[in-house]
Image (cartoon, rainbow, N blue to C red; front, side, top):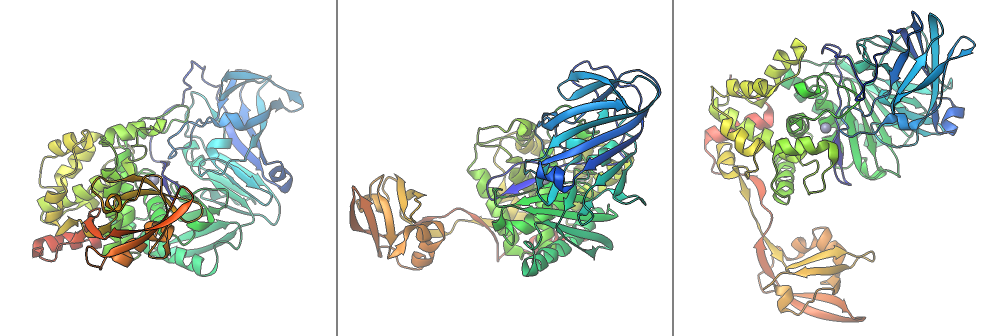
Length: 607
Ligand SMILES: [Zn+2]
């Protein structure tokens, strides 16, 4: 997953028919279900159901006798590392055989136990309340629904999840359906080869815009709700971003893993920010209207699509197979999320969506984010994903894991003299673990990194920067690729401010010895304007640097301040200080460093 604008969150998901499936067992001692066969799900999403903000779910299957059938709903959606307990949204549960109602009770809070009266078909039905706008959940409007398989599809307890399933969608004749599931010959019918696949393929049903293009030789579809919102130039831009970011990602792994890929996008004004949740052949974005055309949009696309390889297929052994009834803790989200985010940025620069400076700015942003956080270890932050810690490090395995990927890429290119890169590690692991039907272990990961680095040891790196809390060795690493962190001299007043609704800014703190303090500005003052420009524009939109960045120190700055109901003008002398460091190219970098740097930016090595 990936989230922006209004903060971050974590999410990623997965599925792969190739990975071995383990039996699912509830956390309580629920007895395994009697075997069931011919499993078929029917989802009713017509106008009447959507009007009630509900989906009707009917599950039919065959039983061989009267042994209890034990069925569960997942507690979470892979990729969204949080326990949601989808059984909470179920109402009107019932089970019948022909005209006979069957006896049922609950075995635990997300498990139903049904007692058939004879061999033959059983029909289980319930309603799901679909009123939550979230990538991993279900949501309705009068003309539309998003639903995730984890929310609606029951699985038999203690049985293999490797069962084929059929889904039939009952809806209006004029409604469209978009899903990554394989269409069957029958109308509005879809098939999945396993339960993992089934719950990894969310649905859009209703009225929405849908078009497609061929990218890297395969079909990509773009489904957007509501109709007409993601249109015209905005849609053309989105398509351009998708078309440019996929090919560099394909090059990392050497194959397109999907038959078709669907970008599913919902825009709604009730949603804060913009986020995505990945799947094996689709992803679901939810966005505020301001998200369309934002700088974050291409980052989200590139991040979510890269997950189709990294975490949907190449995945830590801790998450193989997914189990849906409890959290699956792992120390590896810095790879699954963080390195996905590194490759999201690389796809943008390698595909020409951003220029090298754009890539450096994205990296600078991450360095700044970590600089402001308390020291933390990548592995610990990954384990903490499930509990959304409130110590200031929540979800920071994204930027810090991304930077770890950048560091490893530099170290591998350095040790191999640009013959190998992190790309080779990702491809190596993809082939040696995912393609062999398993998840990767620490031995797999560090072994691949070592192999790509002419045998260089990463024990110290792992101890200090992955399991430990040491600050990253930027100076040493960046020199290898002809980059450095440069702190520019920027104009400063020495005040920390908070915006006020009327466009002014309240002084929260004043730095000791600052020009503002010397000029008589006080904590609690409200700054109305600076050199006749509204305070908000000056302090929160780059105006201060624009107005005074090139003026000589000592230039008087007229600041209008409100204090105790009175308004006064204060002259603050201009002073300069070090700004936050930003990543820049070193113009005097030797050719070797430039070659390594270009290798990262272009996705090339000197094999
Ligand atoms: Zn993600």
